[in-house]
Image (cartoon, rainbow, N blue to C red):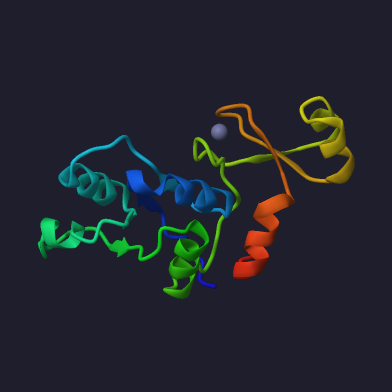
Length: 158
Ligand SMILES: [Zn+2]
């Protein structure tokens, strides 16, 4: 790994809300803007250095081959696990960063068990040992459930 390597950052269009949430939890910086015109998406992706993700087959045709366009990935499946698998197989997901909030994209922070105890249901607290907190929207996350299975399946580890 070279010191200058940074993970790809993404911009998901309005058809890809679930994908945006999964990618954030997996450790990718994903923006998910309000609906807007192609040109708006392109401008945002360019100015923020993001790879544009879409299921819109006509997108590349419409924005044309102009120089300076952002990288665009057309996702073939409507199923979120297959979308992630496609991105992984094409080399977009090689080095995830730390997990981010599925809702607001902010980096999650570890909180200690004493704190977590007051924030999650007793059963959840009793069966997990690591809790993460979003200071943006005050959500608590824990390892387990679908996220872990998902990572294992894709062999994405951080
Ligand atoms: Zn959040």
